Amino acid sequence: MKILLTGRSGQVGSALEPLLARLGEVSAFDHRALDLSDQPQLRRRVAHERPDVIVNAAAYTAVDRAEAERAQAFVVNGEAPGTLAEEAARLGALLIHFSTDYVFDGTKSVPYVETDAPNPLNVYGESKLAGERAIAASGCRHIILRTSWVYAAHGRNFVNSILAAARAGRTLTVVNDQRGAPTSSDMIAGAVLRVLSEPRGPDGLYHLSASGETTWFDFAREIVERKGLATSVTPIASADYGMVTRRPANSLLDNSKLHAAFGIALPHWREGLAAVLQTIN
Image (cartoon, rainbow, N blue to C red; front, side, top):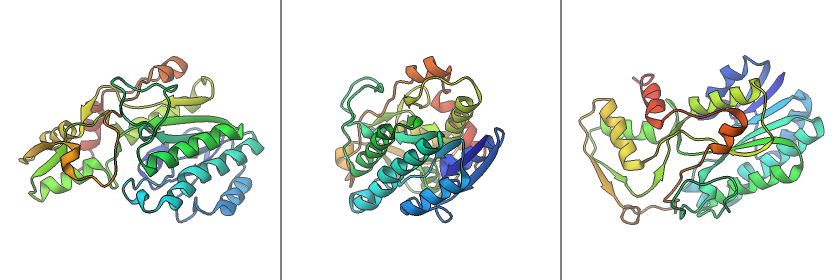
């Protein structure tokens, strides 16, 4: 199996590369080697590699900055996935793509299912939804995995930001009215490996997130407590925090469809966090 991986240096991509290597020949590219905003380059690369599977782990993820950089966000998150999908269709390749809980407005009181109507609150969510729709419209074989609150041992993410602030002796003020399921990149990569190595369910859209739920405030408390840091964590409402960008109050995703099709059920978010924190000094 020949696999083309984008975003190799990102949180999900770096977790994916060594696992995908178990399945065959992997050609992995970071943003310097393969710029998703350069559509002709993207087409040439896919045509040159002729992969059986394309795993698109690259994305524009700067949620706040996307409000001012709408065009760039839509090129990377909307147009590039569509381009990859068109090339996958030409080759008969499978495209695996990652999307987000931010396609929803968060007003639902229970976890979102795949058939719920998207209504993104911000440019980032709009751009990711555009990518989903471009892939579906291409007619290529595809699996779109919506996930949520992604973090890893490296890179810029909530876990590392909390640890850095706590170690610097700062008091932490964290929103307590947004619910979700923190999902580690290792969990996501392991699920993709299973999707590709075991009998596959039908193509389409699936939700993929850790089990359980929490708030950003309780997530922060869990991080500092597990690391034994004497840091005060204070809850605050989103309205009082002064956020630049609106975010969904409910980011919970129902993973029943994924489990039914692939037998995949991710562990509790606390288990994923414990595993990641063990790798962080």
